[in-house]
Amino acid sequence: MYESPIIEVKLTPLILGIVLYLLIDCNNFFVSCERLRHRELLHRPVVVLSNNDGCIVAMSNEAKALGLRRGAPLFQMRDLIREQNVAVLSGDHEFYSACSRKVMHVLRRIDPELEVYSVDEAFLHLPAEIGDLAEFGRYIARHVMEKTGIPVSVGIAPTKTLCKIAAGFAKKYPGYRGACVIDNELRRQKALELTRIEDVWGVGRRLSRSFRFQGINTAADFVRLERSRVVKLSGVTGERTWHELRGMSCIENHREATNKSIMSSRTLEREVYTLQELREIICAFIDTISRKLREQQTYALDLEVFIATNRFRTGQLPYTPSASQTLPEATNYTPALAETADLLLKKIFRPGYGYKRAGVCVHNILHKSALQPGLFDDPEQRNKRERLMQVADKLNRTLRGHTALSIAAKGDGLKQHLK
Image: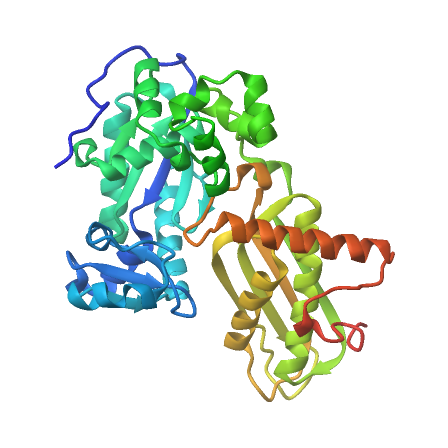
């Protein structure tokens, strides 16, 4: 068993009276969810696959110990999986979203102003005078486990980036018993020395390669740089991370500065009876919402689709269903939102009804500066998607209201259906 590398240090706090953040990070979340309904998978190596069963997106600790890697194509790992009797499961995101909502519901009883940052992570705000911080963190970890069956790790620190590092220690070293606190200068310095630069929140794969080429191998190496060099190497985002690692909180709850939700809906000119027509209408709403998200540099974590029959029509009971889902990662990428919206629409559509109203709403909106990598996140792929959307938005703006590029599933969109 690993020993805790910094838990024994007891010094004065970094800043007396400062508001501390507490990060709840669900351990191997998808695997933990699967073990709730497949108890026989406890202590057995488990991997969960992507939507098309092509890649490994989540692993148990036992699977990690075998050398299996997140993001690795399944076909490359088949021999090892077969030899080691690894359980292979297809992802069930509806179930994972339901488990996530249970965890967040428990946490909201502790802090109603909870900040949900991904399907498996959330921040709470705590006053420094709460008492024994580590014991409080362990209490939360036990409480979540008892109420939901999902194991979590807790990181407590004066900035969100340091919270991520603390939660990583709590997850890696059993000696912390589920909660790690970075609340004084020596703990902060020790934690930064032990943290690889690629493990710092906000430092992607590409940037970490550049840093290592410059001899910046740990978080401690990074914070030793002069501010001017940090800006030169990594821009404003890197400067924010540099301040956060030094104990200065820079990442606030940006959801308060933006819309908490964005909706696009319409009453239709005529009743729509076919799934295909509704799909085109919903995709038109997605096109509008995703563009608004990009304009304000925000990303949505929750998506809701609703449809409704004509409530004034006699001889037929009204049908007003809706369906929602928490996305694997916050996004403003039109195709990703459209794909999820299409799945939700198929769940609630019933043939034989004439639909008079439809709409889409996104919730849990995060500012770009508060964005963090998700379980599926590939920084290079994300950059490609963002560049594609930038080109599409630029072309569409030059046509002054006319759309040059849009998602193919949109078809004629709302042209034939607006009232």
